[in-house]
Image (cartoon, rainbow, N blue to C red; front, side, top):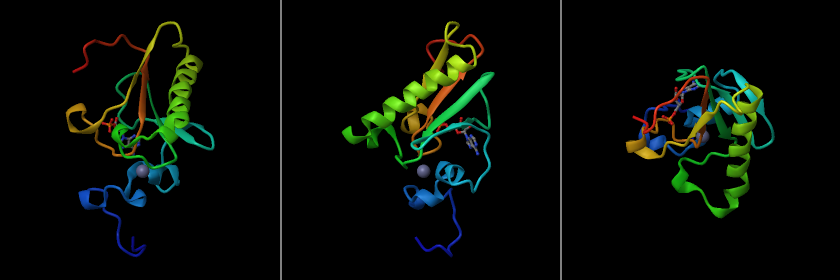
Length: 131
Ligand code: AMP
Ligand code: ZN
C-alpha cells in the first residue's frame, strides 16, 4: 500500500488491507475509542452505537476479516476472545443475570466491519430469535 495514498475505508477493493480497516486503525490509536481492556493479543472497546447498557467489542490485534478466515492456528486467539468477553461481563455484574455474545459473519448476519470482533451485550433482557 502506498502510504501517501489517502485511506478510503469505503472502497471495497481496499477491504483486506489492514491500515484501511477501521478496527486496525482503532487498535493503532489512529481513531479514538473507549478501550475497556487490552493485552498482547486483544483490544476491547465500547461500541459507538450501543444496543444495550453494556455493548463491548472484543477484537484481536491480528487482522482477520471474518469467521470464515479463521484457521486452526487462531484457536487460542478465539478462545481468549470468548474468555475475555465473559470476564468483562462478569466484571460488570452480568455473570448470573446473563449476557449475549455475537459474531456476525458476512452480509446476511449484518457484518459491517470486516475485522473479526465479538459483540458482548448485557444489562437488559434480550429477545430470541434475534432480528
Ligand atoms: P458488525 O455489524 O458485527 O460488523 O458490527 C460492527 C460494530 O462496530 C457495530 O456495532 C458498530 O456500531 C461498531 N462501530 C462502528 N464504528 C465504530 C467505532 N468507530 N468505534 C466503536 N464501534 C464502532
Ligand atoms: Zn483490521
